Picture 1 (cartoon, helix red, strand yellow):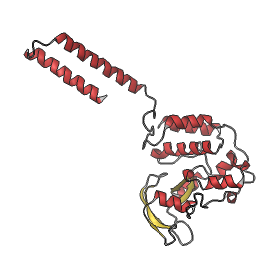
Picture 2: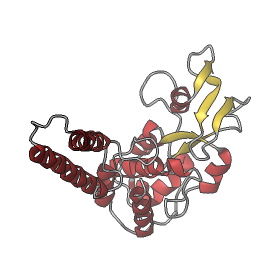
Picture 3: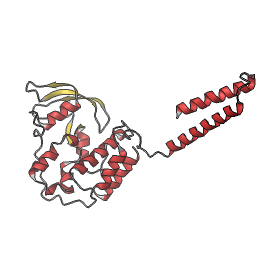
Picture 4: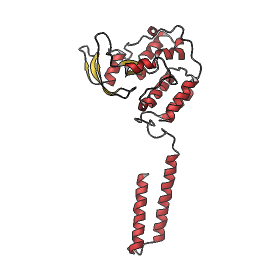
Length: 253
């Protein structure tokens, strides 16, 4: 669009110069004027088509980092089953065998996630256990350069391992009918795992998108898209308020 407008400016300037100075008196001024008019009309049509473009319909489509294909994610959202929450009766976190080694690389899913998300990470002699590193941007708060150091018996208080679709939310959305193998796969799926701020992780709990969204608004498109993609992959249901909230976020992407 800017290129078209630049050519309009150049052509009009040339037209004015010819008229004022008489330079190029053998030129067909009517033809030159017609050309200028055509370019202006084309520019106007281009501008109108840009104004009609739906939010997020360009490459990527995200309002923050361009990583969300809004049309595709919306299609997946429309394909999810909408129903009320199932009872929480029988839910036990231990029924989701988490921090196993689903990809068979010898390292558990949590350490794989740390190695994926941290920079300048230091790994123990076992080749798996991540001892320290730096999180360039913590996604829920947007805080930059969050340091991570492993505690004596678990992850440090600086970061939590988070299921983007919480295990309990998965349970009431359909996972209560799964077998043990499917629950284990879900609990260790890297597509559903993030390192996040502990306080925000606890505030979220098992909430869905209608009940909680990351304070970092720049991450909300990716957050909601991840929830939709995970729920689509595992055929989990959503509630109507949850779908409405997801649509509102996608409309802003």
